[in-house]
Image 1 (cartoon, rainbow, N blue to C red):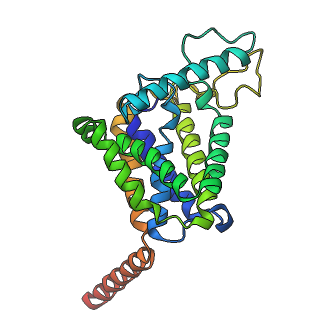
Image 2 (tube, one colour):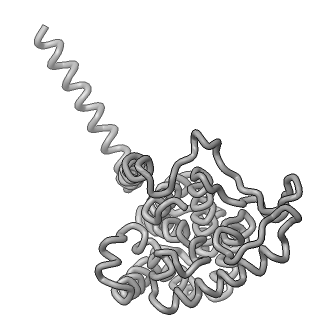
Image 3 (tube, one colour):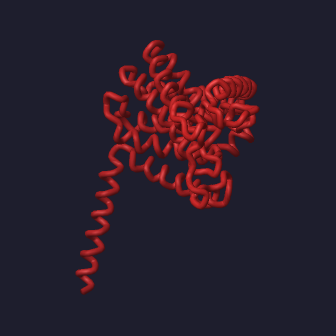
Length: 277
C-alpha cells in the first residue's frame, strides 16, 4: 500500500479541491474554518480502509481499542471475501485489502455517516471528527504521534474534534461529513491503485474472467513500489507542496490578495523597465 503520510496528504489535497466545487446542497463548506475541517476529515478518512488489519500503523492510533477494532474488521472482511469470491479468486488467510478497499465500502460508509449525523446531530459530528482527526494526526504527523504515543494522539483528537465541532452548521453537516468520509476512502483506494499490488475497487459486483476480486492497477512500468524512492522522494513531497499551496489559496480573501500582489508586482516591473529605457 502507499504509505500513511501519502494517503493522509492526498486526502487533504482532494478535500481542499472538492470543498471548492461541492454544491451547497451537498454540504459545501461556507468558510475557511469549514473548508479546513472538511479537508481534515477527508485526510483522516483516507486512512480508514487500512483499519482492516491490526498490523497497520493507523490501527495503533487509539491504542488497544483501535487494534481490537481492526482485528474485528479483518475478520469481517475475510468472511465477506470468502462468501463473495469467484471461482478464480484465491484463498486468503486475512481480509486486508478486500472489503474496505472497494467502492461499495466508501459509498456505504459515507451514507452511514450522513445517516448517523442526521439522526443524532452534534454528538455524531463530534464522534466522526474524533475518529477521522485522530487518524489524520497519525498519518500527517507520524513521527510526532509515534513519539508521543496513542494516549496523546487520542486526547489531541478529542480536543480538535470539540473545537472543529462548531465549524459544521447542523443543517448541512450530515451530508458534508458523509461526502468527506466517502471521498477520503475513495482517495485511499486511488492511491493504492497506482502501486504494483492494485486494489479490487469494483469487487464483488463486476466479475472479470471468473474473478470477482480482480485488482485494478497500472501497467507494471507505470506502477510504483510502496515506500520506494519515487513515493518518498517525489510523490509525497509534491502532494505536500500542492496541499499547502491550496490551503493558503483557500483562506478567505487570499486569492484576491495574491492576485492583486502579483498584478502590482508585474505593473511595477514593467514601469521600472520602461523608465530604464
